[in-house]
Length: 189
Image: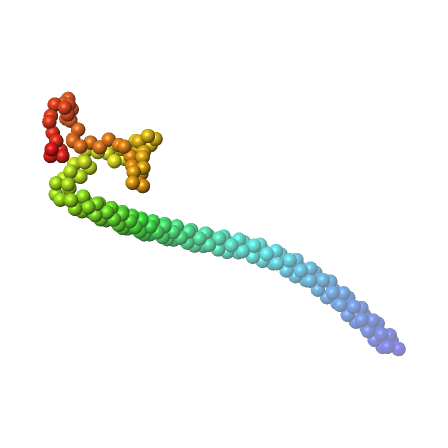
C-alpha cells in the first residue's frame, strides 16, 4: 500500500509537473508570440516606410524623365512648327510674287496691245497724222480735259455724246516766254 501511495503521489507530482511545464510552455509561447508579433509589426512598419521612400524615389525619377521627354518634344514641336510656318510663308510669298508678276505682266501686255492698236489707228491716215496725234497726246492731259466735261460743255452730235474741251495744238511755252512770241503752226499751215 505504501508503494501504491508512493506511486499515486509520484503520479500526482508528475501530473503537476506536466501541468506546470505546460503552463510554462504556454507562457513561453505567449511571450514568444508577443515578441514575434511586435517584431512583425516593426518589420511591416519598416517595410511600409521603405515602400513609401521607394515609391517617392521612383515617382520623382518618372516625373523628371517625363518632364525631360516633354521638354524635348516641345522643342522639336516648336522647331518643326517654326520650319513649317517659314516654309508656308516662303511658298505664299513666292506664289504671291509669281501671281503678281503674271497679273501685272498680262495687264501690261494687254495695255501695250491696246495702245499699239490705237497707235496703228492713228497712223492709218499717214505718218503726218500719226505725228500730230503723238504731239496732241504729249501736249494734253486727257484726264484733266475730261474732268471739265459737265453741264454746258456736253452736247449730243450725230447721236453721240460730245464734250467741248480745250485741245492744245502746240506745246506749252518754256518758263518766262509767251506762246504768242513764237510763231509755231503744228498743223503745218
